Length: 117
Image (cartoon, rainbow, N blue to C red; front, side, top):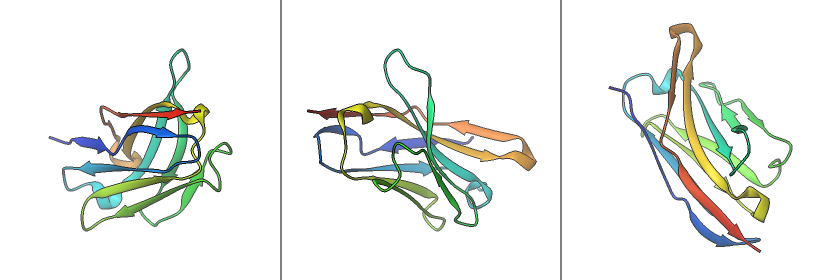
């Protein structure tokens, strides 16, 4: 059974940093495009960033230059380094794993990030 387990969320002041981790079980990880999404109260879930199996990355304009996604295939883990955090970054952050050719798409339970002003 595939599981994605996020960690690293918390409360931080504006301008601070957090590092989120997402540990994946299963043998699919190295083939998957991994992503981070977030959902703020009353808003739709939105894409934050993705990283392909080959290491290509994509970022939402709102986080470019502040957030960095990375992956460690040996540890089946994807990371999200968040710097210069803003109150508008406050949201529940979800890890996603997708292998389109296998029609696989998994979500974690998420971790809360709260940025105080």
